[in-house]
Length: 240
Image 1 (cartoon, rainbow, N blue to C red):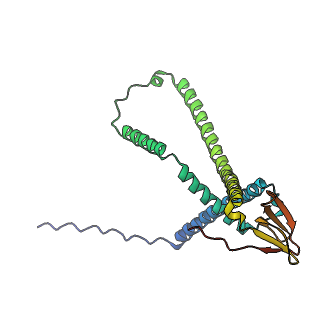
Image 2 (image 1 turned 90 degrees about the vertical axis):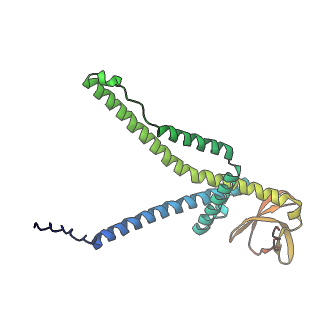
C-alpha cells in the first residue's frame, strides 16, 4: 500500500505591523486636514463675497461693517445652501433626463461586440515617421491635459466667488422687495436717542460703531453713528 501524500501546510499570515497602520492613519489625517482646509477656505471666500455684494447693492461700503471669520464661514454655508436649492428648483429636468438617456445609449453601444479590426494606415509607414507622429500626438495630449487641469483649478477658484456674488445679489433684491412691501411698512425698526425717536426703517447691518438703516420714508439707506443710539424692534411674525 502506498502512503497518502502529506498535506502541505500554508504558513500563517503575518499580522500587519503597527507602523503600517500608523502610516495609513497619518495619511488619512493629512487628507482630512487638507480637505477641511480647502472647504473652510471656499466657505470663507463665498461668505465674504456674499457680504460684500449684499452691502454693495445697498450702496454701503463693506469695510464699515467687518465680520469675524466664524460669521463669514456660516454666511458662506447659507449662501451655498440657498443657491443650490435655487439651482435645483430652476434646473431643466427634461434636459437632464435626455442627457442621461443619451449616456445610457452610448454605454450600451460601447458594450456591443467590436467589429474585426482592419490594418491601420500607420502600420504601412516607416518607423521614423511613426515615431515622429507618436511624439507629436503625445506632446499634444500632454498640452491638452495641462490645459484642462489649469481650467479645473481656475473653475474651483472662481465658483465660490461666483456663488457668493449671486447669493449677495439675490439676498439684497429679496430684502429690498420685502422692506418695500406693505406688510413690513407697519413693523419697522426704530432708532431712539435720549427718549426721542430719530428714524425708523429696517436695519441692514450693524457694528459697534455704525448702523446701516433702510429708511422706508426716504426710500434710501442711511448710516448713523451708534453712539447713544437705542435700537428698538418688534418680534417678527412667522409665516404660517
